Structures are given as structure tokens and as C-alpha cells.
View (cartoon, rainbow, N blue to C red):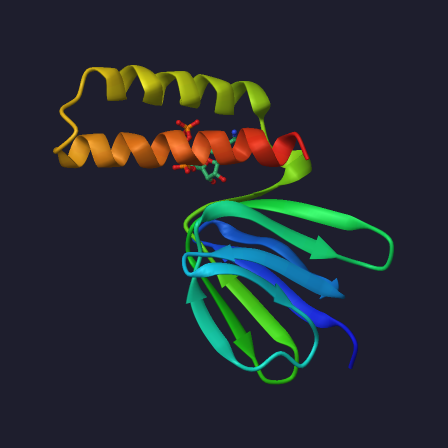
Length: 134
Ligand code: ATP
């Protein structure tokens, strides 16, 4: 089999389902490239871009962290709190979310949980803006 059956799932449903030639992800421990027949693995992901390579074309999906699971038989599932295909990203909304998170951060103490949460909001917004620009 020279493709990988790939799904990206969220609590709101499946964002991506398809057969791809290669997947590139940013795991918390480092970047990973997955080809067909990759060994089974589970790894946590950064708030980052997932690249799905076909023959001659590429697709990008923004993911808000989560996990990648590679199973025997070239099957990959990414499970994450939120994911958006590049073409579905609302750039103005992400820009507004970025500015709102920056505004929040400027008024918060760095040691608080609220600061950590606002940092995540900022990362999600910046990731969406970056993926939309690819
Ligand atoms: P916002 O403040 O704009 O709601 P957020 O980071 O708080 O952003 P999430 O909680 O991560 O949003 O996601 C909530 C839902 O909205 C998810 O289904 C996510 O896919 C979707 N979503 C969030 N931002 C965008 C965007 N810029 N474009 C498209 N969908 C988005």
C-alpha cells in the first residue's frame, strides 16, 4: 500500500478524511514525516500545521495540539480539540482573536493560569494566520 488512510477528528466532527502519500506534523518532541508502513506510534502535537502530501499537490490543516496515532496498515488518526483546513480559515476572525489575546496578555500576571490560557489563544490565532498564508 503506498498511501496512508488519514483522518483528522475533533469533538465537532471529522475535518479531514483521505488517502495521502506523506504527512508532516510538528510533535512536541520534534518534527515527524510519516510515509506508508511507518511503525505504530502515538505522539502529542504542538499547536501547528499538518501537511498532507498527495502526488504533486499539498494540503494544510491547522491543529490546536492533540495527538497523532499511527497504526499498522498505514492508518493515521489525528485527534484534536479544533482543526481547520487552510481554505476554511477565517483570517479576519483569527486576526481579531490574536489582537484580543495580546490585549488580555498585557493586563495579566505571567504566573497566572489566565495568562497561560491567553498564551494558548494567541498561539492558536497565530497558527491559523500562518496556515492561511501557506
Ligand atoms: P475565537 O476567539 O475566534 O473563537 P478560539 O481560538 O477561541 O478562537 P477555538 O476554541 O480554538 O477558537 O475553536 C472553536 C471553534 O471555532 C472550532 O470549531 C474551530 O475550528 C473554529 N475556529 C476558531 N477560529 C477559527 C478561524 N479563524 N477560522 C475558522 N474556524 C475557526
